[in-house]
Length: 270
Length: 270
Image (cartoon, rainbow over all chains, first blue to last red; front, side):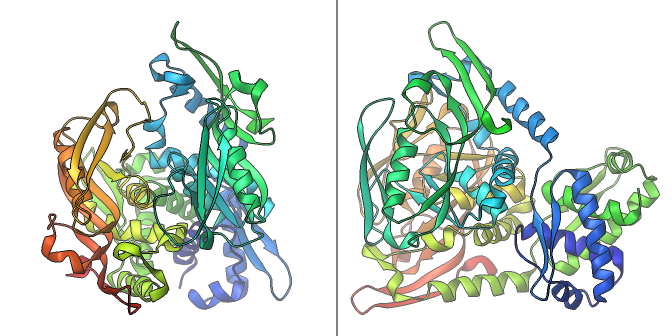
């Protein structure tokens, strides 16, 4: 097979298998080419991934080595993307009762959701995350997007314990902003004991829900290596029960009465 | 820029923008190359996409023309994939009360979910779908996977009308299997009147939920061009209220008492 053909096939393969270790012999066999040719192909791909700002190929030397596609998104592109999100959200008609923000249109766009996933994966790629955890419903698409770039499974906690999926672990927690007692459940067989996880959600006010997830994950002896939220509400910062998180956007100010809103970059770039 | 570099960049671009019409001048400018060179590049990519079984490039002639990546998944690969899913589900320990099946582990794997999305997108690519609609919770990842290959947004109906997102349209429907009255809501501004949609869900028994979605979508003057479910339960076929659907898997037989289960291919390949 010619180099030009191989490059198309290998690019597709690597993009579909982020963070997976791929051995040179694997490509060598798949495309019937010498290892030295494959090696040259990979240099071309590495350079071009960098040029396109979608990451790079990491070489792991040795007999058990190979290469891994690290989906590191270009910083300038990330900033431009986050700014474009902020601009779209800076719209008073998006203000919902309770200081929430209408974001379902953005969260309904697979391309936007994928970009958000790419950004969190860029930030969390070196943390050896084994599972992405979220709570139903709005965080689900974001969790899958992050997971697809980290190449790990998603586990979904539910607020609604009705669905029988075998034995579950459940906790009660106090919602930080509404001060209501809520519950959250996770199916026992859905998460292995002792996993390293990241938590993904769409919105954080005081952080009660995320704190609840942390408590629930303790029951599974999980290590929470990272917490990623699309948007945080700054007005609630004083009461915040979760402090170690990464946010793409910050709702710096929202005033339902005067129809004012200000959305800025979150702490992602700090 | 050299051909080898361009091929990597263009492959990435096309994979990220399925069904989008891309003009040759766009690539010509992006990679600073003559249109004739770009045209040769596209032939290489087209052949290689076919070889890898991930689709092909469609040429649209004329001044407003260009090419579109059609994510048509190879039939043999599709069958092998569906058979592997069936094999994994053919496990009596997966039987849940009420004739449901534990599938959360499969649905938690982004790679598996993406493959399922690719299969439905292959079947629905020519239907000019404008929106993918699902109902919370389990269908959400599948809906996004389909939508990402069809390059259209996702709209999520909810069973829980508590969440205030502005005015909603709500319907009551009778769940086909449990005969319970349930309700389903959709935010008014989430879906444009008169859209062509496809419905995606994870599981269909008698089809009450999907029938409910159809009623809800009628309120938005939507045309339901396709219905895709990952798995259908054959035992409920007599009572089925939805007949025109595409299923990847069929639970041909499930017996909770004797711990028997039989999962086979759905009607996708008929």
